[in-house]
Length: 372
Image (cartoon, rainbow, N blue to C red; front, side, top):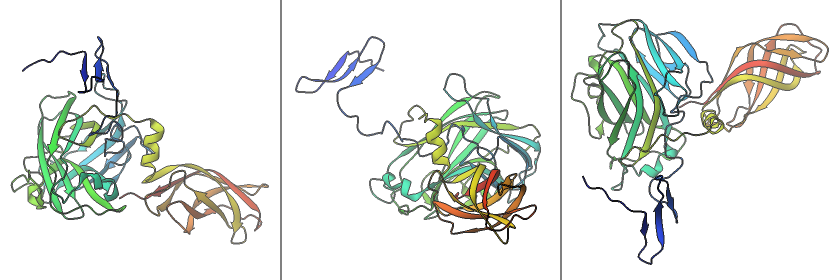
């Protein structure tokens, strides 16, 4: 290995293009091209800082979103676990949170169709610069931090949803109860492009356990048509004992064959990105009464335009008032004119107000879901 010691690098015209001071700080005189300095990370909420749905969910036996935004789990017959937004993080890396899976009921003997994966889905229109399906298809690099009590081989997939294509790579957790950084590079795929729309085009998936239906073939380490038995070959069974756990944070997927430092984005920016797909929280709504005063009606404009017209779910709570009396909100009656930007919401309540009065509600917990 050789070492190059310089204070500056000059253009052929004699001007400094790059200078390095005694502390190692580097200054550029022009624009840095190639790998972008910002918006490098294709993954949203890779540092697990946003958890709109809640910080802990127990008794999980099926697929769904539970805690940290944008990270879904899929699977069957994997035992039972608790998922949480955890504060256990690698020291000195700038992270405050991780996502944790902790098994409370084991499945040491997986059935053929058993599997569990954590994944994030990405819109096709956000993937066009990968140039997939062309001779110039870009290599991408995945980096992340992981910690578990169970060492061994784990599998990561990139799954092309549009064209049912797959590439899989293995990594190893070497030490028990120790944060380790992993870096995995995936070649670009010169076959079949991603759709240029707001649909689900690419899944990044982390395997946690897999029965023979998803692990009895040969690990598919190059891009090809997806074959289920080749997805998770060699994957350890993390579900095989109570109190097994795994934590992830710092998940980054970027163009190029080198992992750059994690792109820490401000909380408000990351929240807005998450809220393109899901908004859950307490809302104050204003409108009027319908049904002869039986139900509150309100228009609502989302703080961030959503990926698509969302499904709307009443979660809990809320008080409606007509200026004279208060009524407990009890549920969602209907939704109308739902778009990616706004919706009309009809609630139910205890009691009946005089029809036509103005109405306002407070502390109504709703979920607007436009996930992929």
